[in-house]
Length: 187
Image (tube, rainbow, N blue to C red; front, side, top):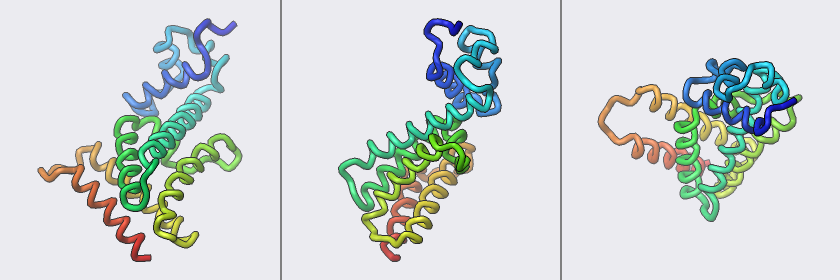
């Protein structure tokens, strides 16, 4: 019988907290069980093993990232929307590196429709922002890749200490995103 108060969302939330603090490699059934004060086998009532934990973290992360992007971009357009959404994206990656790594870096399996949908929601929000530039469908794909690569690359360098010079990283990020926007206008 499942422990009272323990459910799928609680188990995934505990795993996501571990992933953010210690990395995805630290997410194991035994580590999550210890965090929740239960034995590892009891987690199987709520998740399908370690893969279920990682999938749950991915779904949670993508859902939270989509909400952050949506909240940042609402009521904005063009450069302003792109800048606000990119800043929210960067803030999410910095605050939740484990959740981000679980779901937003690699494309989900075509067989996993819920994960596909969660990833599509993030891309759909970014695509909506890109409509301001009237890009062709192919150019939109290239622009999506540029945004994701820019935010990912910048935050990866930032969080790993790759920016050792004294200039303000917020200003550097701001300029990066505005350069992307200028490039989109040039298409």
